[in-house]
Length: 217
Image (cartoon, rainbow, N blue to C red; front, side, top):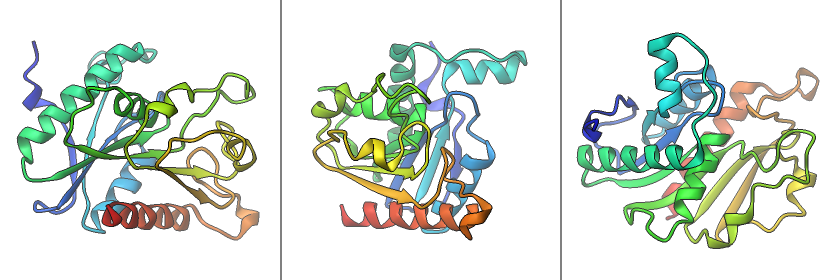
């Protein structure tokens, strides 16, 4: 069995950060995608310690050089548990939040909804939650929300095809959830040029909201 302490995290932020936000990637891009790099660097600049890890299928892509489909949910959630244990070993005095991009954030919410979620996890942050597959609004991924008791911040683009502002207005969200809307943002929070906004601006606003959310806890 792999030593859980040896998980190859990408680490950003101050060594003495009070908060450690563990982030998982989305279904198709790794932990060092442009989006993940940008959000981690922005959060680190705000004093938040960020730990990024990869699910088994994505880690294998690096060694084998072949694209693989995502692992099944039990494997992904198991990887989340290992990452949390490894992070706790490295930073025993830190407060922990979990989350991630799209699928990674969804898996974090599924773990947080389980009755045996590690008690060191104090919050969840999702970046582009995949409420439903694009073009399939009837296939909702929200059944577990009723069991989610931790504070949740959902950072979402207003025109995200996985869940627009109009879509989400009709959903029952987790009890302690807050939604931050990136104006004109897509699934990566990127606005259109015609909006007069930049992607960097959207990511900076999202990072500021995450910082404020954690500081309120």
